[in-house]
Length: 272
Image 1 (cartoon, rainbow, N blue to C red):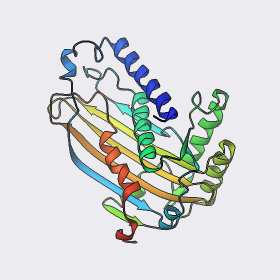
Image 2 (image 1 turned 30 degrees about the horizontal axis):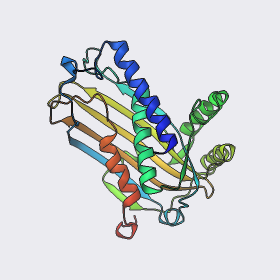
Image 3 (image 1 turned 90 degrees about the vertical axis):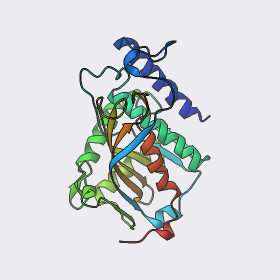
Image 4 (image 1 turned 45 degrees about the vertical axis):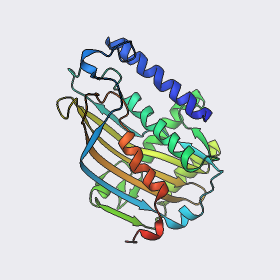
């Protein structure tokens, strides 16, 4: 197993255990708590799905499968649940972010096993003293124009394109390109994977044992060439179809959609 992923997974497990212990839950005990439902695999039905997907064919063709990839934590992060949610022991912004990060890491290993990943999170591979630098850079990225005159933080451009998959040679706006180049240069990475927005909301009364709405904007940049490699906007409602509560694995449905960005034959995708 990749060492980065080991560290990430261990940190996530400790986070989950701490969350359960602090809330009185028993997710890891001999028997599940009454409100968590049965053990086993979480089964979900996806409802109300919308998406936008975009690939840059030239950038995709020149992918260096041995280069260093910098992976950022989510820039805009939201985890919402009712105060009386009885199975949300481990649900928090941190656990949602680490859940996506573990999915990302496993997909990179599957797609490019020789590509090294650099976790751009203070306290992981980025020095703790860089915390303020990373925070300020995240804010600058979010406020910088990205598409259609809108800042990166805005989902409006993708909501207007919902239902579209396209190949498109999109360069980065000059200011955005400059910021990404500085970030890549500081940590000696070629590529940047950036979950721009990650929002998860729990609905305990939907489905067999609960449901959640998942929304994310995720992009992959080639910092050397100043290009977007691909971009994925995804939103869906995931309802449980068995008695396992959605107290974990929120990014599992998204992992299948994100894998499409790696595995699609671009010759079969129409340009727009």
